[in-house]
Amino acid sequence: MSELDQVLARIDADLAPALDRLFTVLRIRSISTDPAYAAECRACAEWHAVDLRAIGFDADVRTTPGHPMVVGHDRAASGPSALFYGHYDVQPVDPLELWEHDPFEPFIETRADGTKAIRGRGTSGDKGQLMTFVEACRAWKVVTGRLPIPVSILLEGEEESGGTNLPAFLQAHAAELKADIGLICDTSMWDRQTPAITTMLRGLCGEEVTIHAADRDLHSGFYGSAAANPNRVLARIIADLHDANGRVTIPNFYHGVPELPATLREQWDALPSTPPGSWAMSACPCRPASGTAACWRWSGPGPPARSTAWAAATRGRASRR
Image 1 (cartoon, rainbow, N blue to C red):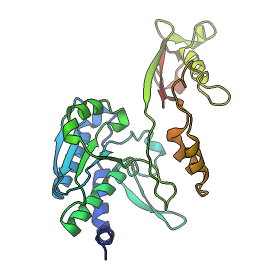
Image 2 (cartoon, rainbow, N blue to C red):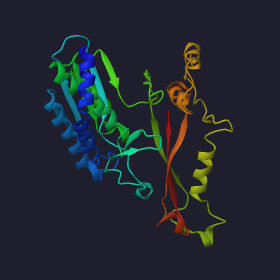
Image 3 (spheres, helix red, strand yellow):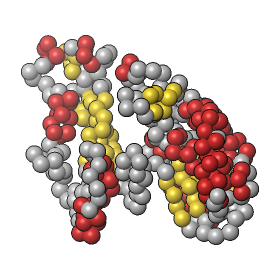
Image 4 (tube, helix red, strand yellow):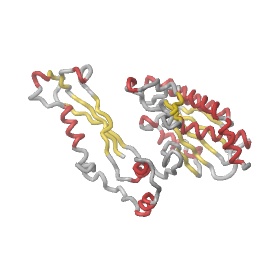
């Protein structure tokens, strides 16, 4: 049996404790967008640092102006070095009433076709993928006593909230984190049986727009036909962002965006047929830039469906990729 086969066999044999470790970290409510969960984010970072040290990494938690980073190194092996990036923070879970189960109490579901899936916030973004890489390192260390190449691990706690502190952290620790290969395990598969190699990702730029109208909230019964409603103004702006074909209408929005290379298009066309949506997801990183109205914030008093007031201002968030 080859060394790799032994490692794979070890991963299979270690499935139950590996799931226990994954479920432990899935239960941590590391929601980076809400300051109320800052302590949980740090607890999650600390958990990962302890886990990495348990398998021989020199790992610690690094403080940033926001949520902490986790950095670990195991460079005992020779050969090209790799830097693995993952993130331990998760998206918010609102609205809770739409969840069939507690999002932070993971479980294994057996689906109608007999396949199984882990359910819970963070299982696929990015705690599941992150722990898959760590478990692979664990199995290599158990079977061979070493990793096959030098490995560094960087775990971020703000990926779901914009990664504000990541660029400065990378610049400050560039020498320490330098590697021959960069690996991100937070992307898609071609289908359930076929991995996909993602070679590029689209970046993200976002802003919040505030529409101001009156200098105070107005009663809709008195001013409904006379005063400007900032919600209606914002709705028109959002509606006008795209034309009838879905293209963004902002002047020069596509300036500098390269066309899809013909060779890449031919490679995609040659791929076998897959379930609906697979090609589109694979094509996304190289498709033309897009604009999205990501959020519309209510600014009036009380629940929006029950208020008769026209808010003096309203806010919307938009993002571009």
